[in-house]
Amino acid sequence: MTYVALLRGINLGRTRKVPMADLRRWLGELGYGDVRTHLQSGNAVFTSDQRPDELVRQIEKRLADELDFDVECVIFTHDELRRVVDGNPFATVATNPAWYMVAFLSEAPTRARLADLAPDAYHPELFHVGERVIYLWYPGSIHKSKLNKEITHRNLGVVATARNWNTVLKLLELSAD
Image 1: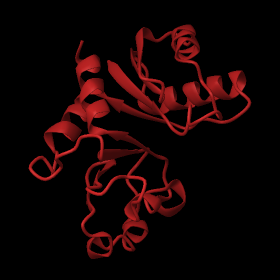
Image 2: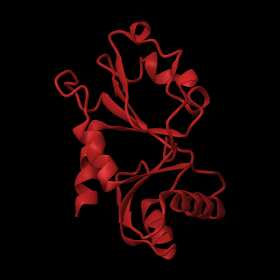
Image 3: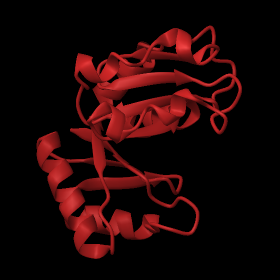
């Protein structure tokens, strides 16, 4: 099966550096096939016969063994990524793919965790909760966003890592090969 691994919080500025050549090598040494990376933000595509939960455990352990910090990982299959793209709720609204994000989640947050996310509180920013994802539209840029500050591990209670729409589409393409 083809998987997409999304690493959280690496290569941000000068800290938490993970060279993509090393990541490809480490994933290959774990026995994963056809390992490819996209950009420097921790996106890897590979094949494996293992279950996603086992992949997460192996990848996080390997990275912890190799690095001086922990890295959380979220895994999606190609088919799950296809459903994310096909389920795009903001196709006619999100006009700048750099400001349109998808937060990929390790699991669905509880309703109680989502209860404080009142759509009107963030207008004109928009969000839509999907299956293990939250679609995020930031029409005034991400850096000034109030909503972006709410989509965190602390608030959601699950691992969350976001990618812009351009990256999501590229990962779908890479995982289809």
